[in-house]
Length: 353
Image (cartoon, rainbow, N blue to C red; front, side, top):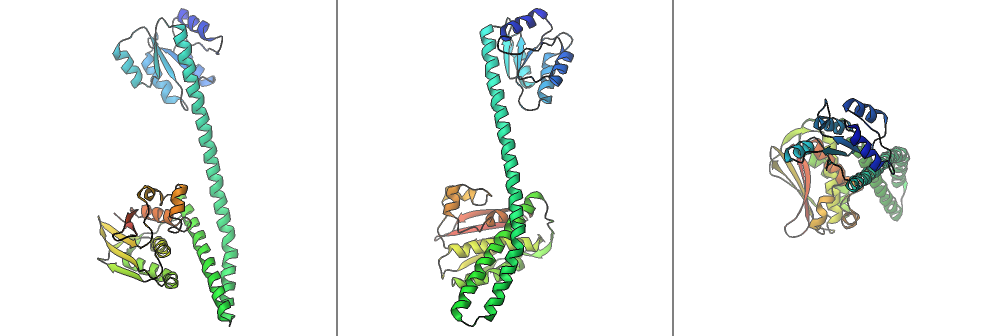
C-alpha cells in the first residue's frame, strides 16, 4: 500500500515471482482489498497521501481476524515514528529505498508465522470440537446408565432382604456398595457438567455449615464403619451462610470419602469447622500417604497430570475433587490441600470467603 506508483511497481517486481501482489494506492483501496481478497502480509507506507499510515495500521490490526502482519515502510528512521508504529500494532519496519533481499526475507518470515498461526487455530478448533463431543458422550452415558443402575440397586436391596445365608448376604452387600459408588460417580459427573454449563440452579439460602457436615457424615458413616474408622468432628464455631445445602453436603461427602479411603483401617478421620475471612472453613484430615508438593496443584483439576492421578487416585472418586472445587467456586470459596502435622493430608474447603 503506497501512494507512489514507482514504489508499488518496485515492490511488485521484487515479490511477484513468488507471491501474488495486490496494489492499493490509498486507504480506501486498501480497505476494499482487505474486505474482498485473502491477504497474508500488508506492506504499508507510513506517509500515505491524504491518510495517516499509523492510523491505517491501527485500523487494519483492529479489524483483522487472527494474526495479520503489517510491515510499515518509511523513509523516516526516527524513533518517534517507530514507536508510534509499534503502538499501532505494526509488526516490523522497512526503510526506503527497500532492499530486495531484506524484503523477501521479511515477507517469507511473516508468511511462516501466519501459516503457523492458522495451524494452531485449526488445532484449537479441532480440540474444542472433540471436547464438546466428549462432553456430549459423557452426558449421554450418565443419563443412559442411571435408570438401569437404579433397577440394579433396587433388585440387590430386595435380594439382600430375602437371603438367609450370611455369606450370600455379605456378597450382595458388597455388590450394593459397589453399585452405590458407581451411582455416586455418575451423579458427580452430572453435577460437574451442569455446574460447568450453568445449567444447575444454585439455590442459596442461609444454612448452618455444621448441619451440612453432619448430614455428610451420616451419609458416609457406613463406609467409615467398614474400615473401623471414627469420624471426629470439632466445631470451633458454627457459621450460617447462604448455601446450596445439597451441593455443599455432596462436596463434603467427597472429601470424607477420600479421607476414609486414604486412611489406614482403624485410623480416625478428623473434621474441623471454623471461621475464615468472613466465611467458613471445613477441614478434613486423614493419616494416609502425603501428597507430594509438586502434585498438589493438580488434584482438584478436571484433567490433572497422569502422575498426579496415579499417586492420588484413591483420594478422589471419579470427578469428586473437581466437583468440590466447582461447589467452592459457586459459593465464592476455594479448596486446597496441605500436609498434616504428624503425617497425612488436610483438605480445606472455604465457603463464602
